Length: 277
Image (cartoon, rainbow, N blue to C red; front, side, top):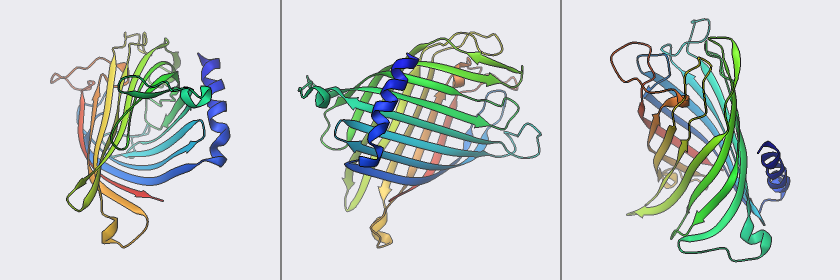
């Protein structure tokens, strides 16, 4: 799987400088109802985002990096301030239809791609996670009137670090189902977009504490409104609400009872701003 993912990544990343189209944006989102394993209460986070998506003759590239800044309820390892985390993600896709010059559409599917990518993170709390994550597999692109809706049926493999017990963890390879969408529409005179992603990852063996992991669900939903006309700018400026749902975060079983220091389900509303260049 690692060899396949690296080969697809190289093939997809080569045409970055020769993109037929691209969209780069910076974003900001904030909320007070985030949660972290081992912390009983909620956490406020301010998140700064840089995203880029581009397309070329045979596929697409997507890159995103988040800088997540927690309040003191999610402290650093020293406990002097709120923790900071960097989370980066890349996905590259190669269209099988374009590569073979064949119409692979059937029913609601318009094309199939081979997708590969990676995630990595670093956080300065006591857990000190260092996620290294590879994914690869087919993605089905569905027909929609405008925008896109994609469904990936992928395999994934994760390595991480548990600073509490002081050792690295090499998880089992498992399945990874991921959906991503961006559907533009009009609300009267205002342009809007419903966008987001949803991931479902299978159990990946024992974690650093020796506990069997559970299937994990993460969904991030956004309803964004184009307020560019208010500023008279060619740059697209969007604002709107968002919502994050995370079940069995990091694969740890949920414990929603009253006991402290538990892994509770995340249901976090957010306020968001995107500026596209």
